[in-house]
Length: 338
Image (cartoon, rainbow, N blue to C red; front, side, top):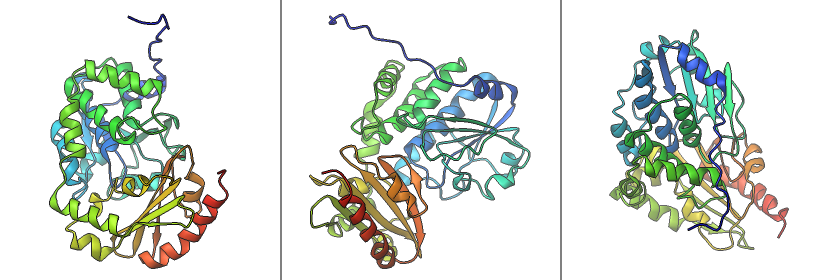
């Protein structure tokens, strides 16, 4: 029984030129960003499964060492066979998805290795540089997986249980289980449609949240032990240097959502995780809570992303980078409305 409120159907915002580019192509490269997350694997996997229905040949860019252990199930689910550099260069179209900047593409030799390939850029990062011949960027979308769902529907492809599960995994991950401010009416409606299409939600959530390896658990202990708070309790940060990450048995691809530990402290408005998975390069994950944007803070250090979730990479040691960034972050938080 309802209260009489009219529930509107989901408006499909897929640009016509995106569909036209796909219909006109034969060999299609599927490309995401370096250090791919569940959203990235979700969109690559979903398109890898969907495109053959249209008679297209998909080629997924997944260089060796790309796939984090905890996300291997998404690659296996989609049946992805990583493409060679030659196969990617021979594609007449590339769907570059969930990637804000051209330099972040997960391709050996970057896009310069594919000079004859037309680029369609599909993304939800507010800082996307519009590097494609065709650009579809919706900064208020919960995830790139949300957009790929709309694209698959616009192309007239079936949303199979496999596709539904891959897309759900991407949306669930980027919204932290539909708990973050990027959760919208549209994303919740799409999640419902994915459930109806047969998405395996229980298995997906188990693999994303309750399947940590011993090494990943050891890394969590490091993050907890190294967490620090500012005097006013509104800024929190943690660190994991190269030796700590290696001692835990982890690698770069294992660093992803550990920033949520820092973010979870009551009263924190800005959280930062500093990690040095590759020696001499410090990756910073910025998170904003209670409507706080961290995008401008990330931009101070050459980064980008979303208002509530952003990142940057700087050369140097953990101690050097934290000594540089923490004072700026403290000033940033001090300027926030209380």
